[in-house]
Length: 387
Ligand code: PHB
Image (cartoon, rainbow, N blue to C red; front, side):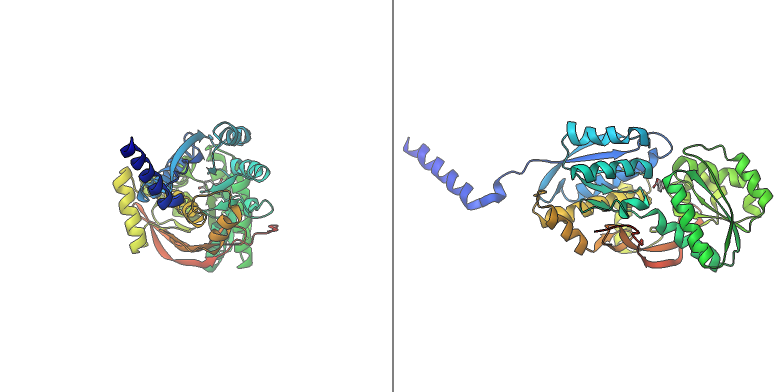
């Protein structure tokens, strides 16, 4: 009896001495809302892979808490977006939502996140409004705004001497915003946009539009497509022979994660993006090696954005020691942070969007090779953000 009491007393003393550190925090529930089917399926998978790679590198814990994943395939369908995020919040009771790729889906998610004060980290979707009028203390982006990479290409194409361009994209938030940002940069540099062509998302019947381009005879074309749609567009553009007469440019999504499938048709295309395949920095080399080892796949911009979404979550969680009720301190830590991304270090703007270098890249073989920096430390203007 005496011995048992002593043991119990010893155990209690040990617990006291260890303090709160030993009080096991519950698992952190992370809701991954991404496209795992449709034209953006590969993008969703790369984001998921990148996020999980970072968590694994931290021993499966962020801010001292083990991670439990809840997954929804959002199908890049805006009509299902509100229901999908509500499932994660109300049914699964997640602590944080990570998602998504498609701007229209992300807009619906941002509205729910604002209304319910759910922590949301966006690992791709560039919808300008999310870090504009919809900006909020609980919403962060690890990727880009649609304005950023397209504006940079407009400036770049004008610099390269182009005067008369046609833009072509999908008719939805991301396409509209990239076409507008391209036009802003291009006209500022003295260029003129002859036509703004589009087709409904996620259609890939490009033939009539390619015929229109051939008839309009611009001196250059700017395109935004991504994933499976980008593969088909670049191949169709070359098959129509247009790549021989009218140089094709794009926001870097046009050739990112797609080169294996685009092959010869993509060679020589210049794009602008916040990542490239030949950065040759120790940070990026280590990331790429770890990614290839884990997934037997080459990483792309989407993998980087997923990885950085996890890094951002870790920075916030570490600042509050895993206690997500301390939202103001969580946000403060991120606003002050420099994120050590494979793309290069970046900070967040007051609207919580990356302030980052936009690279000029040229397709050579299966790589988007760095051809220079189009614009250094480019910040989205955050038009309409009151925060
Ligand atoms: C978007 O809808 O915001 C979007 C989708 C795919 C990309 C880039 C942007 O590659």
